[in-house]
Length: 295
Image (cartoon, helix red, strand yellow):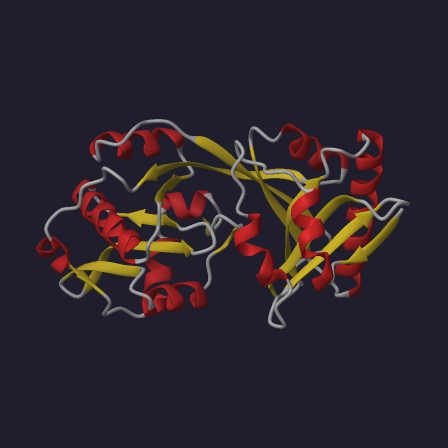
């Protein structure tokens, strides 16, 4: 078995080798071209059998200095299960070697609670269950938005450091150690994330007497046409208005779904109730492995 980096010539072979992972639907065809772009930060490794058939694949990305995130673990459904197991062990070992060479502090990965094999890998490879986010996707079709006038209370007139500082005083944000959900990852929110969202009118606040009283930040994933309402912190009225604004922005961005997200299941259900949404959720689990101290 050979472990190697992917090449541009591998595109069709990758699409053929790795099955859809979500009820027959898969985002892979929509994002695979970005893997081969000169600007990509992804490190993608594939395991090849003796006949050069692709057996398994995995990716890592350095999302912050010396902090890595792993994603995209896939197995060829036509390959022998024992061979797949060996391939995954070899792939993980190769990626860990790469991260150690780059002096990594830690690595994390996100998986759904329904992906049992992915969860089992965590314990076998020294990861621990760090936190969970509950989420549910809602189709844009049928969702109604209120009149634009009610969004006038929102403002983009805020300092990004004040935005983050407001969140740091929030109990929910403290409970998840300042992490947020982006679909690709669950990771620590930084000033650059807020700045990028603000520039796209996807981060906004509500103020009273020039003090921030509520905040919201959405995360757009154009590859799958989703808008994730990653952070909404305020009273019920703000939650309702922010959700409506999210639906409006999702339509402007030609999305097909909006994602409601919260680390607390009970709070997510409460928000679904006040918004008149279908109830339900699935958990994403963040697994984490620390290589060395932060110092």
